[in-house]
Length: 150
Image (cartoon, rainbow, N blue to C red; front, side, top):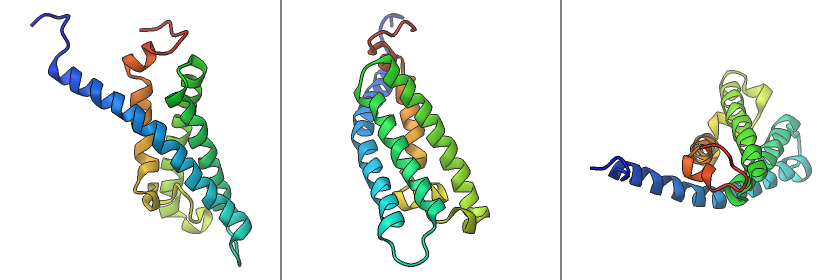
């Protein structure tokens, strides 16, 4: 086999990464809407004692998901950079809030990131990892207008 020809494993991985980009471009706006509605409900419609920390964290999550979407849709370097920052922040918050929701549940409350996103099928934990893999994939980076790196 020539070194120029991609292996079957590389082709499969490349196909998986391309499919992941499409899935992320659809799932991130849906998650942003869901987290935003949750935050809005917790802040403005929920009766009784409202945990503002949980509502604000859900709102921050919604904004992160919405901003991260740009890198999956817009093929510009600035959108790629914004998405990398948002996904790294999101992953850090999922890990921090997820851990604190077990160790200090009264402090964190019930957010999108509680228990590592268990209420959302663990998508808040899985998606930033998948998103970062997609963003750092060579094909993704080469498809960006203005990209100079390999």
